[in-house]
Picture 1 (cartoon, rainbow, N blue to C red):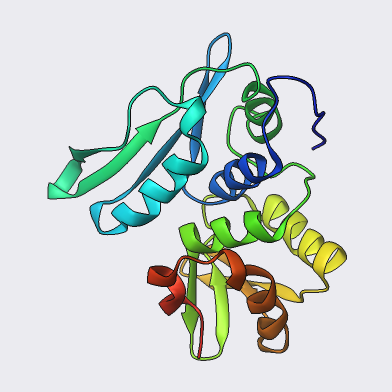
Picture 2: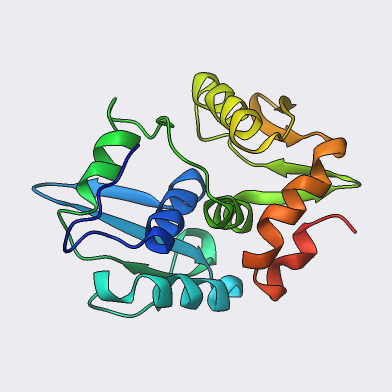
Length: 191
């Protein structure tokens, strides 16, 4: 996915936050122009507030708490419908279901993706990509290798798959994301 640098376009940081969020928990809708929704647990309030600050000029209403299903309390915000968001909707939802297009994985996009959907298990790092089909997950594995030299594989998680970053690549992954990792989410990385 390529971006131009015209007036009204998004900054590189904003593009990275959007891409990282769409690889993670972000969701989009589109009528004429697209909007993006950021929805996390209230326990991730500081993280949602950080995302909001990154994208504040695309949003009218700041994050709010909302009662979800099963007593879960969410903390969320939604962007305005904007023409500069529409190419992301078209790329990620080309088939009507969220999938992974070819894109540039910046260190900030990797960090946001990890903060959304990353976890550790002993010395390994997992990216919980179960919402994507296997083809999208394999595309992500290729992008990690080609763009950053990170080795990863698909790991079976019950009846789904997720991405497992090889232990030998965890130091490289850490080096890339740590400058953008919020301190309260550093616990997700192995020691």
